[in-house]
Amino acid sequence: MGLGPVEAFRAGFVAEVESEVVGFALCKDMENDPSGFVFPQARETLYLLYLAVDEAFRGQGIARALIHASEELAREWGRTGLLLDVAEDNPALSLYKRLGFERLGAQVFMRKRI
Image (tube, rainbow, N blue to C red; front, side, top):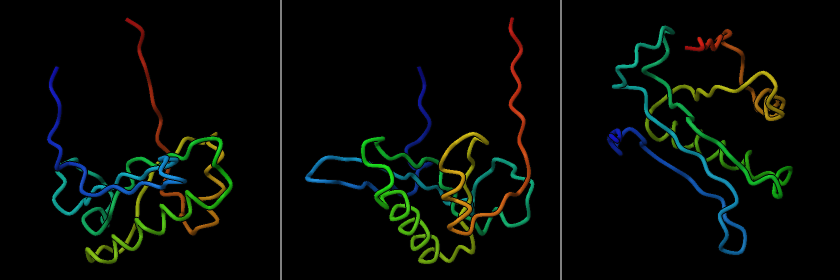
């Protein structure tokens, strides 16, 4: 099994309650990313790859704090935006909208059974 380089993840944040990790965010700087994003602001963007909060701790502002930490990192690195992707039926979608995220388009996942 092969693994990609660790440097692909540029930064991470954890949220702790009484020394227990209850949430995390992983961010990637898109400035030198060769993935071929088709939107013009890609190189100015910090990509929020993963954001997760333990179900027992949701609704307490943890996701909001992790997003704000990611925004601050983006500003420190001179980036003008924060990008994330989310499933249409994810309850966090409403949080992202409240925090000012805007829909860029739609992505369709397809699978062929073989």
